[in-house]
Image (cartoon, rainbow, N blue to C red; front, side, top):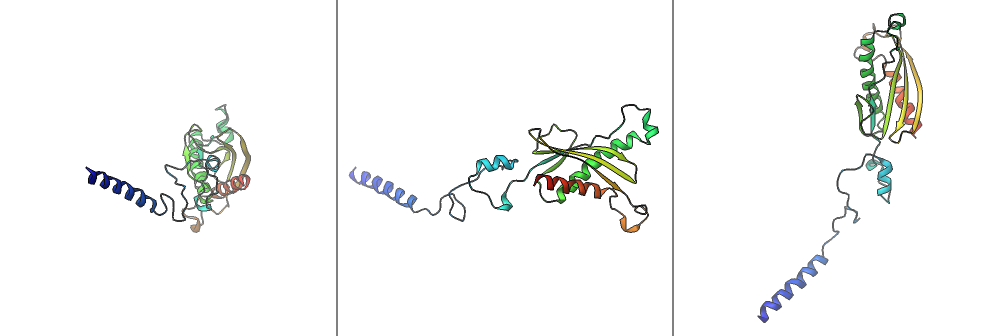
Length: 196
């Protein structure tokens, strides 16, 4: 019986001794004992509140953006469609296409996290880029852009225009290029500038 008690005492002592010799614990390679688990939050504001030390630039959480389908800008009175040279089916298709083009332009800035096109503004994100087609006829485009954060605060309200060059469509070098791309690039750059 005495041998059994001594054996248990030696095993317990060795366990405590060996656990004290463990190097570094669960920390990272720098020796930090902080452990990050689970998915990162989508809001950099929330992330900053959670972390006391600033994260390296490549690890900082970026803002997620929702781009609802643009408002096609159709007049309320359908009698004005023909007078204004508006084809409602085309405008509705452009509303979806323009939202997608805005998404691409925002992604190309490299500043934001996920940029998603949604049917409306009910999806969850950090920023909402709401667009409206003021004019679009193949040569001229005029879009209105409003940017809101999730709290409903308006960050930007501005219109952007672009005139397509007269020979754009006949120039072979422009094959596969979007004639309206400059207006979305201009809008995306303005959003980045405003948020900074």
